[in-house]
View 1 (cartoon, rainbow, N blue to C red):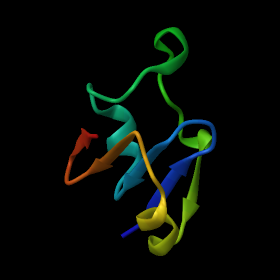
View 2 (view 1 turned 90 degrees about the vertical axis):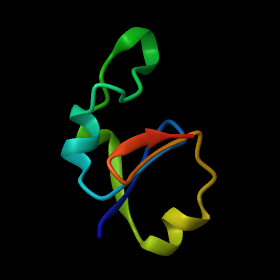
View 3 (view 1 turned 120 degrees about the vertical axis):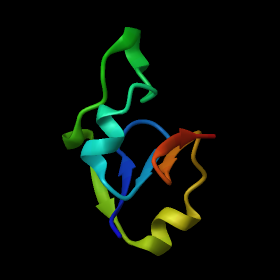
Length: 64
């Protein structure tokens, strides 16, 4: 399974980045702009698990 962290916000995605960004509940920072894949970087599972995140996409949903 792939893991991603956002470059500017404390957001993480565990799994399919495309599905996470297409989710209607995806966060929209900066006045409602949608997140884009290029703002995320792939990281190891260990890096992801150690990150303190405001929001994360896991098991098909965004959660705190």
